Each structure stands twice: as C-alpha cells, then as structure tokens.
Length: 317
Image: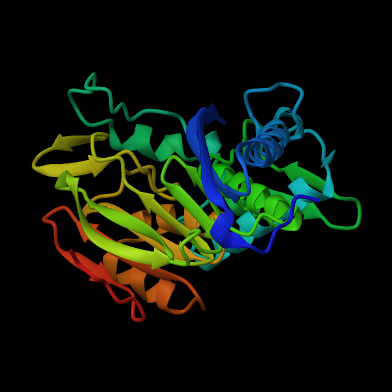
C-alpha cells in the first residue's frame, strides 16, 4: 500500500508519547510525513489494543478477570493472552522462578521513596511472597482457560508488557511494508532494517555511575535490547544497597548489580531476562544467558565492573 523500495528517498519520522504508563518513542522510515504519521498511528493503535488486553488497572480486562477469579474458577481468555502467559511460565521455568508474572501477588512492603527507615521484619518479607508462585497458574490449552489456584493470587505483565507491545507493533509495521524503524518503550529498544543512509541503528549503553556517558555504542540490526536498572530506586541498610527489583521467590530485593542489558530477537524475551538476571546475580545470570541461543547480556555491578556473556563484543567509546 505505502511500500517503496527506494530507501534513499526515505526519511525517519518520530513521535514521542505516553502509552502503558511509559514513554514510547516511535520512529519509522517512510517516503513522506503523512505516510510516516499513518504508520505511527498504526503502531499506537496496536500498543493501545495490547494495553487493554493485559492491563490489571482496567477491571474489565481479561487479566483483571483472571485475578478476580483467583481461587474461584478458571477464566476463558483470548488465544493471544493465553500464549503470552504460556511463554511467561516457560521463562519462569528457565530462570528457576527469578521471573514470575504472579509477582503481582506480592505485598509491597519495601518502599523506595525515601520513607523507609528500617528493614522490614524477616517474617513480613516471607509473608509478602506467600501467594507468589508460577506453578499455581493452571493453564488449560484445550479450553483456553487460566486459573490461579490460590485466593488473593494475581498476575501482572509489568516486566514483559512493554516489550510484548513493542514486538507486536514492530510486526504489524513490517507487515504493512515499513522497511525500517525503532520502537523505544522507555529504554526497551526494538529495531528492524537500517537507517536511510544504509548504516545500522546504534544503541548506547549508559554507564550507570555516570548517566551522561555511554560506555558502549553497539549496532543493532533486527532485534531488541532492554536495559534494566533504575539507578535512583534503592535503599541502603547496614552498608548493603537493595534495588527496587525484588526476587519473587524470597521477597528480598536484588543486590550487587546496578544495570543489566539483554540483547534478544524479541523485546518480550529481553524484558523478562533483564529482570531475571538482576535477581539471579552475575554468575548464575551469565551462565543462564550463555545457554540461550541468540541472546547476550552486559552486566554492570555496583562498583562499575563490566561483565558480559560469551559472544558479545563491546566497542567502548
């Protein structure tokens, strides 16, 4: 419909807006501004559609219905949502539960807004994760139903929703003939094709200890990179820095890592694994990433040391 093979006459067109509670920057390469806008509108409507499907804020969404019926009955859902939950459970198995969509059942006892003066009690931490457990998410493939076994259990897509939406928008635009673009969902970068001058899209990996400086610039041709690490969100007790990323198995925040960047074919997978590596720690995290084809990672610890998976080459600037 809009397709043109002459990329030299094409230009990148970009729009920034708030979707899914986050900043999205959508860039498409197109022949002219009206075509670029049409493509960007398509991406926005796709991301909005997914938000409605996976939102736990909207009481009418299928995700909310699953949560409302926890411990009561299975809920029939669209095949799309069923598949997303199925893939999330596969990642939970892969990461020994470091990633878990039932993390939404966790009691929020850690506060990262400066109001916490002492560490929560051990019993409270233990109790906070008592309803978390991906093994209690029961999927019935034949009937497309999802059942949360425990009352009070909840699922949420905070760790993969943005990545999934970016993947779906990218797929739709590619189907419509958009030869190249970037969907950046608050740092979850998803790219395809090349820039109009034929060069690769570049992604800068920020140095967490100096956010104005990138420590590496890496080309990214057709895939996703997600960086996890909100460097302002942490608390320190007895000399230990606890980040806002909490281990769903123990209720304790992750320690020792400041930033994790994961490169993968899809943003959904990169999103989930970035959170998981934070929780698993450097050694286990890298070991696990090295076992997954076409996935690489860069980890920065709290002292600024850099660790990478086996097949990544960093061009440090």
